[in-house]
Image 1 (cartoon, rainbow, N blue to C red):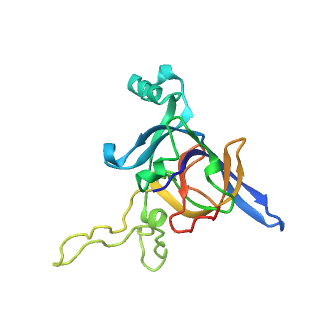
Image 2 (image 1 turned 90 degrees about the horizontal axis):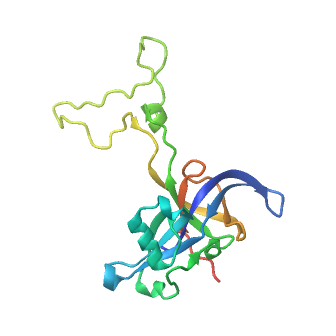
Image 3 (image 1 turned 90 degrees about the vertical axis):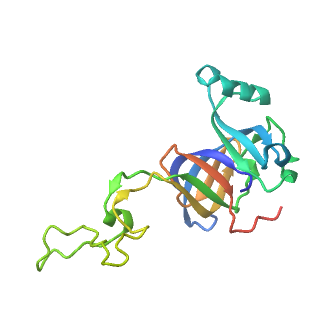
Length: 218
């Protein structure tokens, strides 16, 4: 994992590029995310930056967390997350209390966005897995949206793991990869990303540089 930001999904809109082509974008309010703790391999066993997001009053925050924020010289926040880094060398450019903002990204850069997908409750195989329905004629009775047989004969006499069946749909951690940064508004802490991202409006998101795309040259 690389250095990234926390943000809230604000919704979707569309903008026009220089040639007049419409681009669907998701607006994310990302950061600022102050650094609360720096974890090194020699002391913690791994390398990471612990960052906070969304200020919150101290009197509604648990006292151990208030002390944790106070030690770093940072106001209390609602969300606390860790950003894993490759090695301790990447930590030298950072210090406690330093705010991470949308400036760590560039227009044209590709990012991976992680969030919690919309929950759809308990659904059947047609909604959950895209099965097609049974025909509604020629002897088919009360079996229009079922998943069909899942049983086995004498071998292996069990149901294989991973068999597509009804169940909980959505409400899971999802990462959408290789989304392009279209616009950055540093004054309002907004980042506009081409396409859709997981989750509902106001859902918490993690934004990281794309793993499968090369980084932009400075």
